[in-house]
Length: 284
Image (cartoon, rainbow, N blue to C red; front, side, top):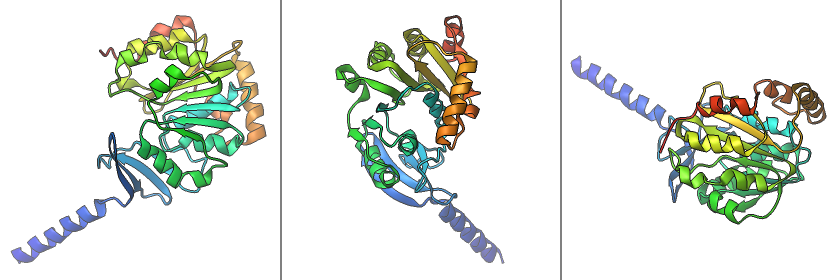
């Protein structure tokens, strides 16, 4: 009887381990570690994991659904459409799973996009799993985003920065970054920064805040990210932005309502800079 009980327990353990093994749809070693595309319990929803750490994810997306945004910060980024007078030329610094790229191309299919991504495997994943859901492919640039900015001369209507140098990031890599980015914006261009609290040094956040005149920001519900939207041109009042959001939402019928997302943002005045910068850790 003890033998039978032991065997039953053995099979239970094996079954549990087997059921916990993820379904891997893509696996490739990159210059920065092993990158895998893994199936989730939700049909069609896939996540990107690094170095076989399957209880965490780099990105998440849904095949066949270009407007699915599974990460908490992603719908907040779409609020930038309220501030963009046009979306003809766009720069993405950090590609991820192509979340914002796919969403934007659904509603603005004529946009010309330069997508800068240092990891060639991430570019391969977007080409393999996401391109068929896009109106057209972006211009992929496999290089260090910081180096790209140093040499860039093209002007953009919108720049989305979702890249980091190290975890925690290395402060000196950001020296002059935001001033350079501002110079790459058109007269009424928009800059978006998805900032992770845990490894962005306070000095970097301070530099960003003092580099732009008009800034709004929202914190994700899990408290891990701040999405900053910085825009050129005259400042817009809350009432003006609400009207813009309502009008644009009516025109495009975005999946994630601009009027709803806009309510999550707060205006950052120069007097607020110290308060917002203090949300970030003091790192070397």
